Length: 277
Image (cartoon, rainbow, N blue to C red; front, side, top):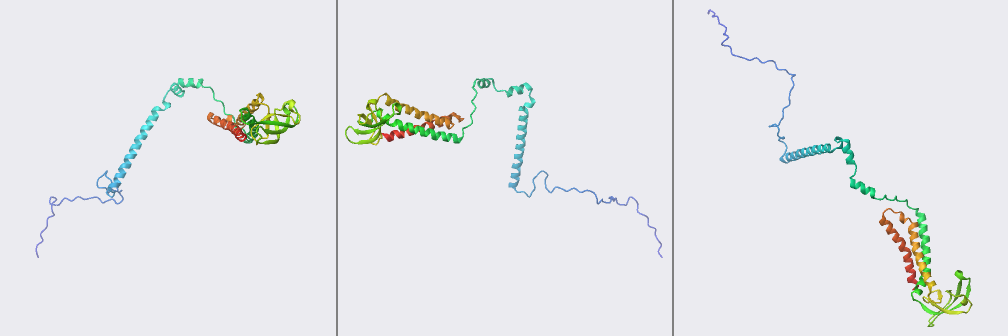
């Protein structure tokens, strides 16, 4: 048998250096890493147009924030909260010139409430009828006073009453014999001409008229048409008052309604004058 040769254990100097790592801990926390290649850059999946839109929106938000901050700072600087009580009282008062003008200005009249529509409508109709009556009464005396009409003679048939209440009925015959009108009203008959069959010079506006005027165009004839004209104008003023035209707040509206109220009776007068011509 071979002799056993004892083997020497390897020396420490000949053993390789080996680092022993600790056992990994399976419960330690993990951190998700950003997939972007370079920090601070937009994701690589966005297109160039999307990146431009995001940059524009980011710039708009920054501008809005800056404007909001500047506005807030300006409001805080100009706020009366930071001023003294004397400064705030001085700013709240109007300037001296404005206060003087306001003190010199007369106070405005308070607008009166409008009238009731029913009362205004009733007054309009009533005064319209009165204006039409005076326009009809004054039309023929006006034309005779200015020289328009036919001359002739009137024969009295009968008379009743005296003075203002006198009523005479008779016949008118034109001077040239062109026409004759029976049973018409005679005005201006003197007391000595009231007897039936009495004849006197007279005038008529036209053959269609139903009244003749005995005598000339004296003062009574002019008073008859002039007073009637004045009453027609007063009816227009009455219409403006009863319908509440003077209660309107703007002065321009009051003037307009007043002119319309006056124009109604004047149009009636013009219509009767044109009809009796």
